[in-house]
Length: 125
Image (cartoon, rainbow, N blue to C red; front, side, top):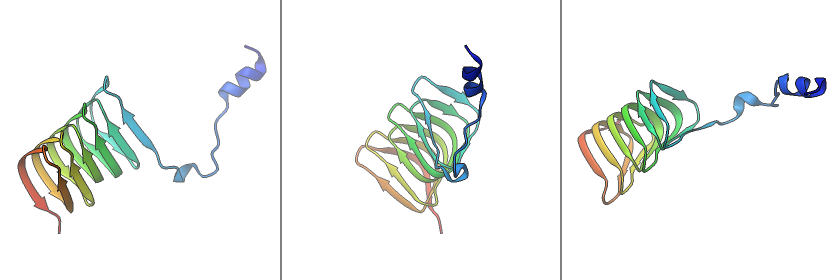
């Protein structure tokens, strides 16, 4: 590696408005996380998370996804499994493969045919 390659690889990237870039986090189906996940953007989960999730954006639990813990998110799409507490100030959609067990606090909820919900559900005021 010559010196110009080293300089290029060791440099930093400057984005014109990096603070305003909406981020998206993807947890793949082979990934297992024990701990909390916080983001300001969209979170897509195909793997397994044991811990709390917090975002101002959207959380998508894909068909293979499994979450054990608390989720606080503006919008939540559930295709997989959640065991814990869910709170949304926006909309929660439980799709036909969605499976939920725990306590639910919502503003708007949509439950599609085939989804399973066990626990308590309370509408936000």
